[in-house]
Structure formats: structure tokens, C-alpha cells
Amino acid sequence: MKPHDTVVLRRPLPDFGLEKGDVGAVVHRHADDAFEIEFVSGEGATVAVVTLRASDIRSVSAGDMLHVRSLVRS
Image (cartoon, rainbow, N blue to C red):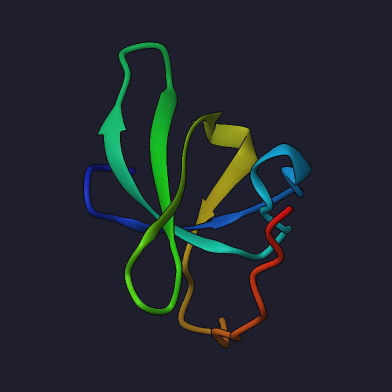
């Protein structure tokens, strides 16, 4: 994965309000196979920027269907 690639979250991150299947973008790749991923709302506002391991994300595939959900904020 490289910067600007679209990725899918493989597990929920409740501390950030993120659910498995949420879509983000790679903003930085660290040397140790970790990635900074930005998740945004439908309006483009940043919801979270999270450092994740490669095992926490996957590339978007041709068979994926994107879905919209309501963002729950505490």
C-alpha cells in the first residue's frame, strides 16, 4: 500500500468511532510496515487519523460495495 491508496478497516476501533469495513486513505507509510490512515465523513471532514499495522487494513477490491452509515459521536 502506498500514500493515497483507499483501504478498508479489518476490525472495529471504538475509541475512534470506527467500525470494521470503514473506508480510509493512506496518508503515510512508516518504515516498519505501519500506516497512517485518515478516515473522513461524507462531507470530507476528518473523523480520525490512526496509525495501523498492515494486518488491520486491506485494499479496496473490485467486489466491494461502499456503504454509508451514520457517524456516532460521543
